[in-house]
Length: 129
Image 1 (cartoon, rainbow, N blue to C red):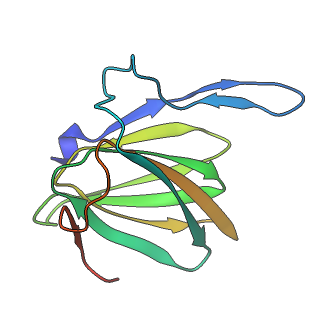
Image 2 (cartoon, helix red, strand yellow; image 1 turned 180 degrees about the vertical axis):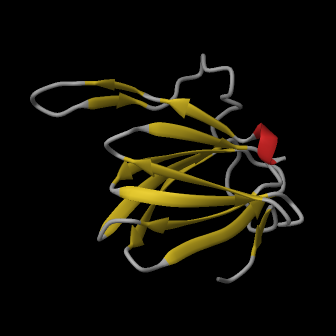
């Protein structure tokens, strides 16, 4: 499953008033529909996750700061680490059945996560870290 994890470079349009970053649109081949979007704030020194979506795909990027993501296959026997920052915008496409957690490399970071269905507590597996 980690082989189906994808990283996409996001388009950043420089503007002296403030940059524009293109996140996703319905024409993207990886876009599987809209369920909900949420923002997750992470303080330095803390880790969030370890979550697995049984049905949903997640489209995650860093809105502010710098974040280290750790991904595991379903049995948690293999892992992949990816660092994403606001200064180097990327989109991570996380398929279903991939465990993930994340931590901030800055005082505070914010990620945005778009999932293709409305969040259902029974659809997500969690292991406290």
